[in-house]
Image 1 (cartoon, rainbow, N blue to C red):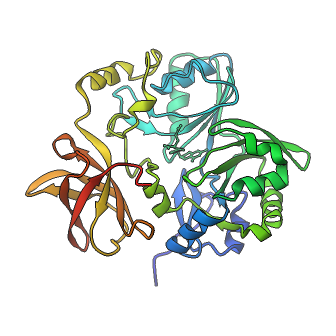
Image 2 (image 1 turned 90 degrees about the horizontal axis):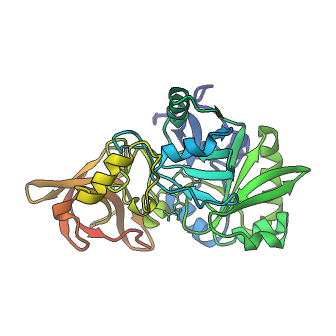
Image 3 (image 1 turned 45 degrees about the vertical axis):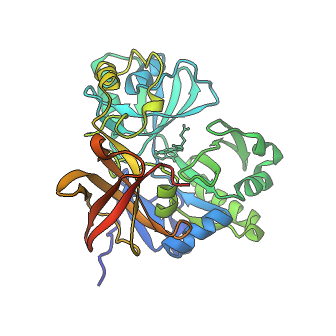
Length: 368
Ligand code: THG
C-alpha cells in the first residue's frame, strides 16, 4: 500500500473540501495545519490545463491573520522591512516577514482594508503566535485572530472571462495586487487580482464557510464551456514562474536578501521593522548566498523531498530545494540557494539527486 495521509480534525478540512473530493483530488499536502490539494489529473495534465484554460483552487490554507485596532499599522510595519507608508486601502503587498535576526518567518500577502484593519494572508508557518506575542510584549492596542475567511483562487488565461460572467465586466479592470468588493448571493467578498501562478487570475476571500459550496458551484456552472476544472498550485508552473515556497526554498535560516526578496526591502526600509538593523548590515555587506533558478540535465528527476547538495567539483556550492520536469522548457527546472562564489548565471555545477549526480546550470528566475 502507498502511504496515505490520515485526515482528522487537526488536518483541517476547508469549506471546499467536499467539492474538491468530488472533483477527484489525487493528492494533498498539509499547509497551516489544513488540507491543500497538490494534484488532480496529474502534475503535467494539470499544468497544461492551467496554462490554457481556467482552474478553481481551494487555497483556504492561506489563512488570514486579522489585525484590527488603532495600532494595526504600527504592528504590521513591525513585521516587515517593506515600506508600507504609501500603501493604499485597495492594495495587496507581498511582504517578507522577519524576526529580530532578519531571519524569514513567512512570506505572506498583506491585504490592507484600512489603516486600522489588515489581513495577513500567510504561508506555512504559525505567524499568528509571533504577531500576538509582539502585540502583547509591546502593549499594542489591537485585536489579532484568525477569521473564518478562505481564499478561493481562479487562475489561468480564461479567469477574466469566468469572473466577468459571475461578477460583471468591470472586474476586468482590477489591477494586479489591487482588491475590491464583489457581491455574491447578497453577501460581499474581497477579491484581488493575485494568486500563486503566473498565468493571471484572482483570489476571492470567501468570508463565511457557508458560502464555499454555493460559490464553487456557481463558478463551475458559469464556466462549463470555458473548460473550468478544479486545480491547485502546480509544482512545475510555480518553479517556472519563480514563485517561492516558504519552508522549502527559504526558512528562518535565510534573510530576505538571500531569498531574492531584496526588492521588497527597499527605501528607508521601515524603521519600525523588527530586525531592520540586522538587515541594513546585510544590505551593506551583501548576502553570502542567494536563490537562483537551476536547470538540471537528464530525464525527469524525482521530487525534491530533502535538499540536494549542489557541488563545484568536491566543494559544496549550495542546494536544490524544489525541482520538476518542465514539458514546455524540455528540461528539469529547479530552485536552489547558491553560494556567492558560484551563483553567476550560466555557471555549470553538479547536483546530487537521489538517483545520481547530474550536471546543472545556474539560470535566471523566473525561467519563463
Ligand atoms: N495568495 C494569498 N496568500 C498567500 C499566497 C498567495 N499566502 C501564502 C503564499 N501564497 C505566500 N507566498 C507568495 C509567493 C509569491 C507571491 C504571492 C505569495 C506572488 N509573487 C509575485 C512575484 O513574485 O512575481 C508578485 C509579487 C509582487 O509583485 O508583489 O504573487 O498566492 N492570498
